[in-house]
Length: 411
Ligand SMILES: [Mg+2]
Image (cartoon, rainbow, N blue to C red; front, top):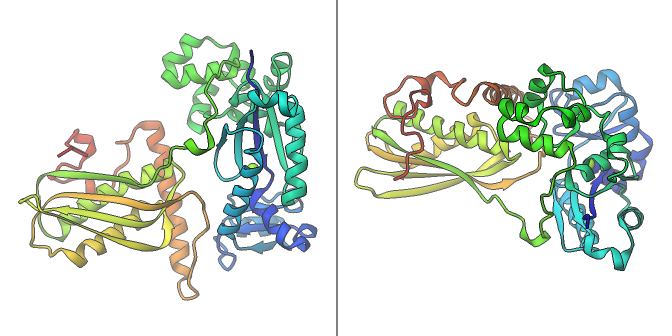
């Protein structure tokens, strides 16, 4: 028997929550952005009117204002978004305990066992849309299908406030003309590879040779081929069974003991680089950083500090960790092992809180962000060793990844 999976997606989530609190915002083009005072701030979300004028998520305020000069800018209210996210998921949970959030504003629901009680997939989807609208003021679009991948495509198919059923009978007709990068897990790099083989639509992907694709893209190739053919059987997790990433850390036992600030810097930067890359991969930022230092006698200390702004950038993590290190360890004392852990992780991009006196800081942050995201893309394409900071490249302490050193060697 086929499963009945729903994918529910809150439409324009941040902007919608802002509009619920201040209905006047519905009548003007409006966007939620990181730091409204800064031309380089980024658009995090926009309402329908702003969307119609061409405002895009992730572009700078400056770009958005060019298209829409009377755009109203609102700073984000993180706590409120989390509160609404919980409210919405609580409503989903009245229909099944198999509710798996995917980010703050999307969830999968497996309602296979609830159909006798609440009706078929479409009926439950329509009930949910009605209740969410009435009880929260938000709208959701819902995809209903026999697997998670197609359900997600369904919630994107028609919005806002719509239900789309993707069945075994209609999936080829509805989904196969769509661009292949709408499929979950087909990112930029994969999309580029697929283009080389003239695979442009989900239908192209479904019809291509699985073995050949696997030769080019490995396991991922097999997976996306199966997804395109409706063969995804991954389960929807129980709501209280979500894996939670509590911290992301790394440590290195060095080839020789570190002494002096230059050594310390290389060690910390190598760690910060790998930790920040993993933060970005998980879409997380940290509000704190912790370091562990072990001396040659294997005595260790650990220190932690709060960050002024949540970050996923190696440069900012490294700077914080370095000043933490210098506050508790003198340069002439040797270090055998160093660990760096990003703690107090958060999923949300709440923008960069600039103090009035430091607009330069925000623009530096912005530039660094672009730089590190570019490095991610290059590494995705050419491997993790393709780009390295010069300071890490030439050293004899065992953190040069290209020399296949004892990077992240376990004690
Ligand atoms: Mg959404």
